[in-house]
Image 1: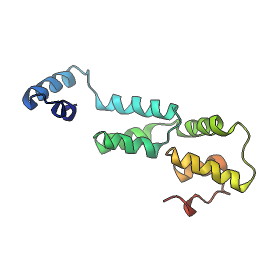
Image 2 (image 1 turned 180 degrees about the horizontal axis):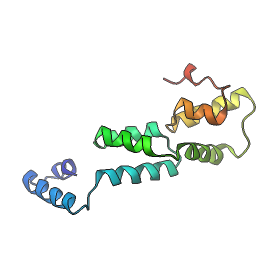
Image 3 (image 1 turned 180 degrees about the vertical axis):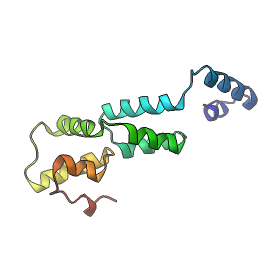
Length: 130
């Protein structure tokens, strides 16, 4: 918040006092922000890698980000929901289709382990994902 206010030309000392007051009143809470953003992005079908990147880019403390990512238990549900929305309910049988779905899910920010757990071990994600 301080960075945003400074970028918009507000006096740094005044901005710091205002933000400190908001934090003291618990109107601004980074932990709550992280939890809400993770739940929102997961609900939109984005995975932990992508959410982590976005939170770090926003300047959120790395420890807080990791705690939020690790504490969220709905990643596999989000992955399956994103897969079903894009490709339908049927599981892919052909290798080419499994790879196509794996690439999509990887782009959405899901980990190799998560993708393997949903699509099966017949997917060689390490061959094309870095």
